[in-house]
Image (tube, rainbow, N blue to C red; front, side, top):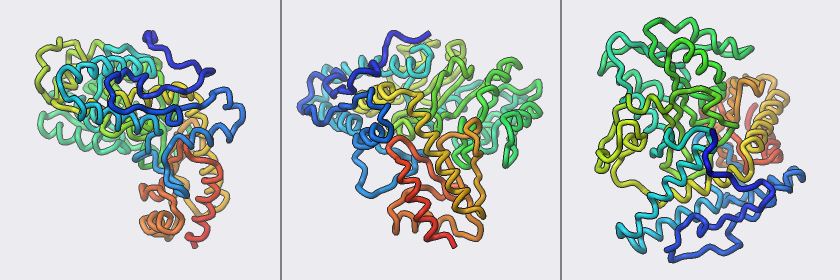
Length: 422
């Protein structure tokens, strides 16, 4: 069931100012020129609408930034909220002034719960995906004889950390490989079905691989539950890039960060734990205030000491930004740009290997290509230094476009690669 928080109507203007985030004591104010003033009705105007979206970001002129899989800039409303929140704390760091951030935290959790279609009791805040992953890895009471099944393409904080913990406590880690060029989602599912045993306690996988761009089928979570196996989804590459309904996905744990596709403030993350499992987890950190939370209160898992609470209203602004545009519209835009990239790579460079599946069903916004007889790190540097194109040398060349990118930029990437790839 959705929470009581309702996103801004998509037919209204995106005009939330920082004052709307309840920071009434701010010593600075934001003018209307700095607020979001985008008519959602103009989505019918196509590229003109997305140019308006791009204008909300303070991107360096002529920079083509296609690195959302690693780090995204925030829209101005979010950046200004970070600054204003920091100024507010510097202006008055008293307990009295900071009290309001507790209320803003609850409001943010409610917005996130609504965005993910779960209850507020199942969502808490962390500093990033890595911390959220470690909370589960170190908190789940696994023992010798238990088994954890992992995808080989998991990020190190969802792979190496399990292996380290296994050496410490004695459970077994089984790493599963999937086909390099999967022809269907079933080809991704089958290796896990073969890996499951009566001793398997948990399945953990990256929702979308940061090294190949392969998107794992949500169906894996439902299959795991039917077998009495817990499922954990690392959503670093899906939070903010695709439509998300955790209740429908059926995972037991979901982790992510705000600083990638979600366009939020840095060092802010989320942790979802299905309600019946909260009391089973041990905290990986215990700080002042831990004792005030009941065993079934998810907030006890984020008792982390002094945190940058000034970023809470900024994270809230990021949620409002996504909700106002719409999850579906954002996901479609990212998918469209990724598809254009894949099509043009195949057209311009028939000798290249497209690591990422072509079909939308098995991919997201991450696009990775390998160019034979090329030094990909060198290409990565040349693209930036000579053509002002920022990507990543991950698995080849990794391009991860998002809503501030344009089809024209995709064409410019192809033009630049044509001059560099022999």
